[in-house]
Image 1 (cartoon, rainbow, N blue to C red):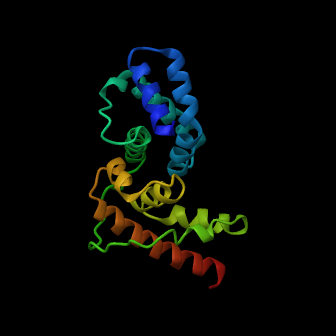
Image 2 (cartoon, one colour):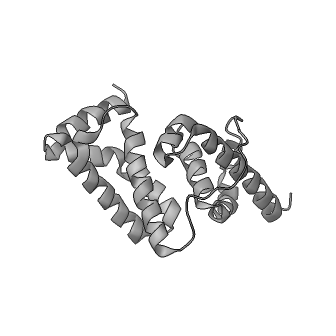
Length: 183
């Protein structure tokens, strides 16, 4: 049974008010979802708060899941929007403006080789310098291992926009890492 099959089965039971299934669903996704949220806010307390809000929404709206995507895509989508809403409340910077021309990036995991322990501080610093929309697609692609099609569903934009954001994020990361590491 795949993770999605397990999650879907649990979600069906959650929609009927099964608290044990909800606890199992929570345990299945809690760590990954928390790290995803925290990576955007860089605040443990707010990340925990949004995590709880996300799972509360799952409890309330489990029956609305239609099965058109993976359960994890649906769940990360809820968390993503709750995180963006929180970020908007903290700042007046628009989180969804991305005025770059459409430039597709179909390259494979170019960042995978960078994820080594000695470079992690540089990578974290450079990730934090990205626009929120670029950081979101990069984190979903590389740290959650989601394909562009699922990322598009989570951030509610066309797949080509995800590719464009990824292209520009990779370019910014290359520049930042080159400057920080003297390359």
